[in-house]
Length: 149
Image (cartoon, rainbow, N blue to C red; front, side, top):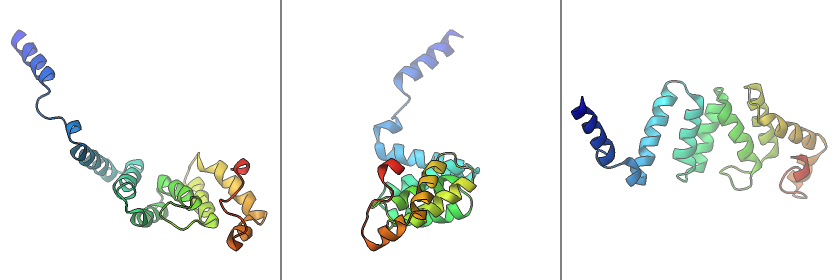
């Protein structure tokens, strides 16, 4: 019994070989494998995170937007929320489009999002007041006024 406890202690202290944290690339790939595994089991949040991390953060924003659109159409609420916020931004891998932002936020709410509802309400009010026409004409930029967001 003592020998087993000593062996466990020695293994714990020694670290049992290199840690994935010693190599950031290996750590990232290990995280991607875990996300892939969980996504294959049906975890929508992990599927979203995998696309966002693997494509968006690695620099393929256009590819990420295409994949997020597919996922959102298939019912992934996280992808729909992200697209709503991506289309609000000027530098987010897709052309800024407030109508498209509202469309994705509306879909996210229909899919059960709790966070997209407030943004959607502000965007719909702004669009109804003619804000989109002003934005399309170039007279305004940036979407609804900050106090309306």
